[in-house]
Length: 161
Figure 1: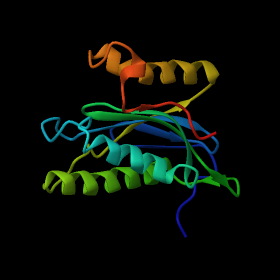
Figure 2: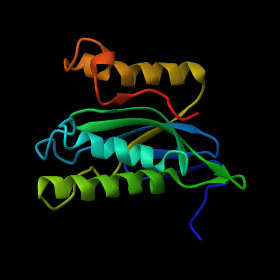
Figure 3: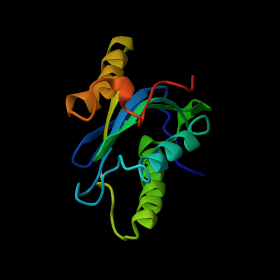
C-alpha cells in the first residue's frame, strides 16, 4: 500500500516541504539546465499539459497552471480519501518522471530533465490563491513573451472544480 499523509508534516532536503491533508499547493518544477530545451515549443508544452490533465480528477484537483520556457507553475490539491492524501512529492515525482521520459524521447536525448527538488507552498487562503493565480497568469507578460496573459497559449485557468 502506498504511503498516505494523515496529518501535518514537514520534511526537508534543500527546501522545506510542508504537507497537510486538504491543502492546496503552488508547485514549481524547473529544468535542470535551460539549454536542454525550451518547454514552450509546440512539440514539448502539450506533453506537460497532457500529463497535468491526465492525473487531474484522479489524484488531485488541478487549478491554474502554465508552462514557461524553463519551468512549470501548477496549483493543485491532492484528493483526500479516508482522511489522508497521497504525498505531494509522489504526485509531482510522477508528473516529472512521465514528462521527462516523453520529452527526452521527443528530443532524442537521455538524462535528467528536471531539477531533483521542486518548490511547493501551501496556499493559506483565498487572497493568497488569487495572488498566486494572478502571478501565474502574468508570468509570461513579466518576462516579455506576450503583451497580455490571455495571449499565452500554454496557460490554463482553473478548470476542474
